[in-house]
Image (cartoon, rainbow, N blue to C red; front, side, top):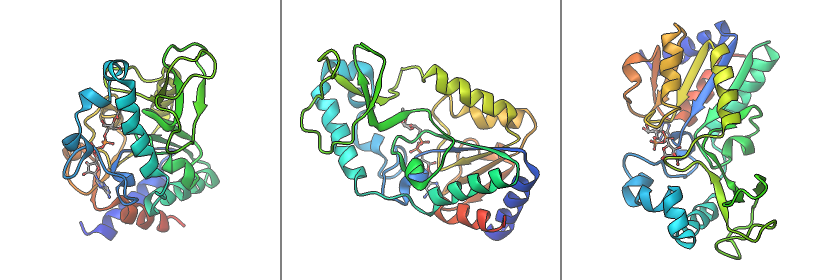
Length: 252
Ligand code: OAD
């Protein structure tokens, strides 16, 4: 199918749905200049996950891990949302004005969906601008926008311990409140988009499988096929910053 025909089919599926959930991954921010994790020039090709994205690594050398996050935070200060992020905001608005439910589940920690104006967002892997105490002294989550950081590692204002990024590292549990809310939405969802994700990291990788197993459509948008593609109802091969606006334009 040529892209416009697939986009028209995607728009028809949105019109027929009552609860649309969109799952996004690093590919959505790629056109904003944020590197993805896997594939060509992916972060995990250049850096070792085990020394940067695990609790053990952080406890072993908080300064080293914080320097990496400080560097990534600094890069993000000059990054803006792209047409894909804005199209998802328009899709949310369109759904709410047409009596449909909508939620956005993102694995991204870069905050760009929020900056673009999306409202019902679940950041299942956390947010790079948030921090929390390593000792969990109060269980508070603080927003910390200072970039570059004046002091590394930053200090907890309550107990003077170390603050850590509010990011879910490998081997850690997702926030139970967040995942419970996502699961509740997935139970109601009758159309799922999976956009710019390799669908390799669980639990997010299971979401499209769950929706397909319930007999509902899943539309995948990606620049290349993934392991999930053979099961997708529609596969739209292309840049999310191009494909998503094209679909949303067809709704009005
Ligand atoms: P990946 O880097 O694994 O996958 C990015 C996907 O986006 C790939 O399938 C690309 O083909 C696709 N892609 C790249 N550019 C695109 C574009 N402009 N438009 C559409 N698709 C594009 O990123 P995620 O799937 O998000 O976790 O990775 C999941 C998790 O693994 C991340 O949240 C992170 C990482 O380790 C943590 O840090 C906990």
